[in-house]
Image 1 (cartoon, rainbow, N blue to C red):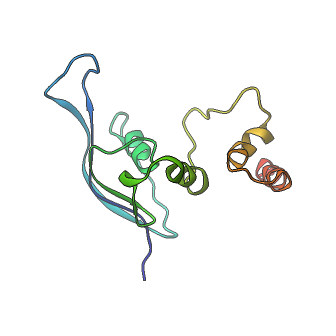
Image 2: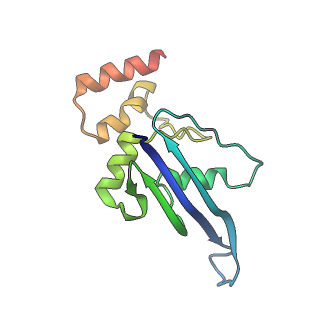
Length: 137
C-alpha cells in the first residue's frame, strides 16, 4: 500500500492587499495546487522569485494556514491541528532550513542544535550525543 506523507488538494492561499484598507481583491498566491508526496520520495520546489515557493512551504510546514483546500500530513488534515499537537508535529517530524538560519547568536552551535530537543524535554545525554553527531556532519 502506498503511504502518502503529504496530500494537497485544491490548495489556495490569498493575502489581503493591505491590512489597513479593506479591499475586495486579494492577492492570489497559490491557485488550486494538487499533488501528493509518497514515503521515501524526494521533491524539489523551483520557480521565479515571488511565485509562491515560500508561501507553499509555510503552508506545508504548518507555519501558515491555507485560505482554502486540504493539506494532509501523515493522513491528518492540517487545518484541524492546533496547540500542542501542531507544535509536536513541527518539532518532531518537520525540518525547516530558512534562507536566514535564525540561529540564536547567544548560543553555541551545539546549543542551537539541542534547542528543539530541549523544548521536547529530551534527556541531557541524548541531546549531547545527537548534537555532537550533527555538528560533525
